[in-house]
Structure formats: structure tokens, C-alpha cells
Image (tube, rainbow, N blue to C red):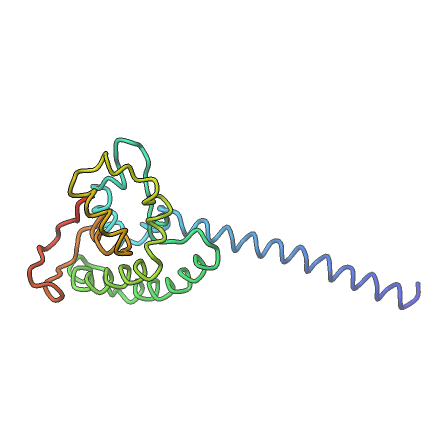
Length: 193
């Protein structure tokens, strides 16, 4: 066998090995993305399970007459792969904070709650409440089945170009102490659903 045939066989071997390694790598990456978007993963940190998850269990996003349930990732992760990866990269800081014990007690969590909520609200406002709109769309709302107050506010908000989170803070979790940004705020109330 001459050197040319050996070299050609070696190149094909590298090409096949590289292709298989790429397929395995992408599969592992997508599998990790899927698993780390699961509710089981989200509440594996006691900070999330003991705080926001317990609150969420008492909302219509968790249990309702229609049987449709929103999970953590439905509200906090985009369906778009690049946006999801971007959010996962940001989440590395959350993992670091977990190991630093930043919010490992209820008291610490409550001390940081306004800061945490404000970041989430800003992200949701910046992306036009993209995750909310993956389930809720103004075009599909039957205003006649809403209370007169809700109907008026939804129409007014839509006309003003508002996004969901501007009116629906605290929809799935209790509100933080908002006195520093709104002295008239009531602590811990959820907005109407």
C-alpha cells in the first residue's frame, strides 16, 4: 500500500471520527439544555424550592381549571435556541451565587428579592414579555369574557404598547418589598391574574 492510500484512509478516519464526535457533542449539549430547563432541575436548589416555587404552587399558573400549567422554563426561558443559550450563560452567575450562599436562607432571599425581581422584570420588559406571549396573545383574548376592569386595562395597555410585565408583576410569585421604589406599595401582594 502506498503512502497516498494510507494518507487518504487516515483523513477519512479523522473526518468520520470528527463527525461522530460533533454529533455526540451536539447531542450532549442539547440534552443538557433540555434537562437544565426542567422544573426538577430548577427546584434542585433549596433557595428556589423553598421560596419562589412554594409561592408559584399557589397560583393559577400552577393549578387551574383548564389544566394548562406553566413551568419555570415557560416563563423564564425563550424557545429560541440562541436566546436560551444566552440566558444559560447568564445563569452561571446564579450558580456561583448559590455556592457563595448569597440567598441560602429565607432572610437573605428576602433581602435580595427586590434586586432579583427587578432584573427579571427588566429582562421581560426588554423582550416584550416574550415568554408570556408564547401562551398569551392579545389577538386571542376574548375581552368579553374578562371583567370590565381587565378588559379596559388590556385594551388600554395594548394601545399604549405596554408589555405584560408592566402590569402583571407578582403574577406567579409574591412581590418583594417595593417601598424603596413605591412608598405606597403593599408588601407581598400578587397582582390580579
